[in-house]
Image (cartoon, rainbow, N blue to C red; front, side):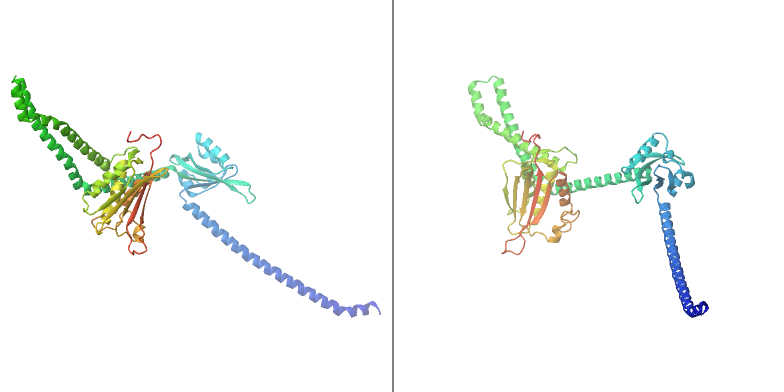
Length: 456
């Protein structure tokens, strides 16, 4: 068979192979085109997202009231926000490429240069510098942070600053608000103290009346004794004989008079001392002056407050005390007196309607605290009320019988003394359904070892 015959035999197979190759090429081209179209869509979506992110970033930068400067790793400005432009009166183009330290003058340049070195190690916070503004130097508080690449290489520095004028104004307003709040708190404390004092006025007046009446009676007797002694000494001075003087002495009963003098003087001094103690207690309780903390006799404060509160209470009130012979605490005795008066008043009010009202007062000390507990057998309070007893203006008493400030102020006073004040319900025995009253526990720090005892 010649070559021409052989070529003719293979021609159909070659033609078939060529058609299949072209079909495959076309299919590959369609796939490549589809991929290109997909990539184009993705690129357009990413460009749109990028444009949206850039627009969002630009809007955030423009809306910022704080100054923002982005620098490269050498401290050359790359970008600033609108606040920086408005503060300095310069356009963003004027900043690009300029050294950051050139925005300041004098000593501020040195501080800023040191900050640019420090920021490579740790962020810089609240660096005070003066930036050259359009109306002169502007004091700023700058925060500087380093900007790193994905590989951890330093690529730039971000500087954010706020004019100190705004911060100073904000701090001034905050300080003023704090001062007003503190003054209001002091006024509330004093108002509650005066309210408590007002409830005690009648009893205190009666308490003062007793020693004053005793003193008055003694002085009236001493005045009569003085007249009799004057009459006798006038007779002695006139030179009357011994018999006449003896008769006059018997008539004036001078022997009994002389025997009574010591008791009259001692009684008068005792009454005056009692008046002095009552006045001192009142002065400490009502004083608005701030005194330094000192060691004081906690038992004297408790007994004084107990005497004031229970003196006008119903006669059937039973008061049981378990007190040591001596117990000192550290703080302001007048303020603690107010706390104890408030606790006692609340307890007396709670047991007012009980058939057998009873208060139990116990005191003692631990290693570092002096403590006092006050237990009453009143009706107690609900769980909801118990959680709110220390809230200002919250009271369980009827309208007009409580301000709702006593426990809140007492809690604040005790907290300032680094002590604690807690209230809890007394669980009744299993056979009883209603609660058996409340238990208040007060803890105060003991005097330091070097503190002088009030007893000397």
